[in-house]
Structures are given as C-alpha cells and as structure tokens.
Length: 247
Image (cartoon, rainbow, N blue to C red):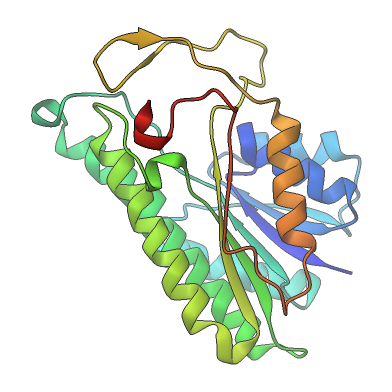
C-alpha cells in the first residue's frame, strides 16, 4: 500500500490531485483548514476510512503540522508521498499597494507551510523502514518568470523553487526524492470562464487553459516513478500560454 499526504485537499487542484491518486490506488491523508471540504473530497473518492482520512490542519502552524504527520504514522504506519499543494491567494496589486497582511498570508502558507510539511515528511521518510519517499512541491510558472502586480506570489513561488532544490539535495542520503510541478493555466473546475490576465505590456487578455486532467496526469507520472528516478522539474502549460519572457 502506498501512502500519501495531500495538502489543500479540500478544493481545486488539491482535490483533483487527491481523487486522481486515490483512483490510482494510493491511500491518503487529506490536509487543509476546512474539515467539511476535506470530507467532501473523501466522499467523492468512494474510498473507505482505511484508505482516506481527513486531517484539518493549519499548515503554517508547526504544532498543527507535527500533529498531521503523527496522525499519518499512527493510521497508516508510513509515508511514501507528500504533495505540497496548499497556498494562499490574494488580489494582484502594484508593489507599492501590497498590504503587509497579504504578504504575510502568502508567505506563511506557501513558503512556511511548504517548509513545515516537507520537514515533517522528511523526518518520517528518513526514519521509517524501508527508508525513503517522494516530495512533490506545487510550484508555478511564476517560480521562473513573473507576472505583473504579483510580487508576493512570485516571491513565494521562487522560495518554493529553492526549497525543492535544497530538499532534493539533502534527501539523497535517505532515498528521499523531491521534485516540482509547475502547471500553467488550468480551466476553472466549476466551469466558469477564464478571467483576463494582465500581460507584460500592461494589456489584458484571456489566455489558453488546460483541462485539469493534464495536471493530474503530470502529477501521477511524477508520483509513479521508482525512488531511484526523480522528475526534478516538470512544467505543463497550454502551448499558446505566455510564459517564456511572458510573451
């Protein structure tokens, strides 16, 4: 039995990831702030409590994250995969108008939360027998090329890129691999139209999107590799989406 943790598992890409992994035979702990949303994901999967559990967690809290991974060890006995997906969304604003509270919310969740979950997963994977596991961080094209008016998100995703590289290096002695999935525009899962996005020249345009299945296919590819193989960075985006130079 392969055991995983998905953060932000109550909605959006986190829910899609959890359902895809469960359908592929994984057993999961779903983490996130909203217990009801996590339970809905579990119910949608059709899997029983022997294969999926909901663990309401504030991933910016060291104690909360420690409790999450203790629950995983107690319930499943080991950990093979962490998908670090949770993040915080804030409005796009010019640099001079970004409130400190919004900056802090993005950093606390996307950077500190990713680190805390990776740290606890690393400890679990290092100390279990057989040793090892895989950490997949949810990055973004913005980890490599920014969009206008998105300084907090851009800085956070650049930090995740650094975490991915450091974890990949530090995990080598313990058979722990770490890679990053950078996914471009995914069509809204609720079927709503894609909103316009500001381009590098300041104009607004509706960009191409991918169906969510392209995202889950990429995640499953990374998760299915044996531990002697690492997909270090995988960027999946619509062919016509502005990315390289944001043009």
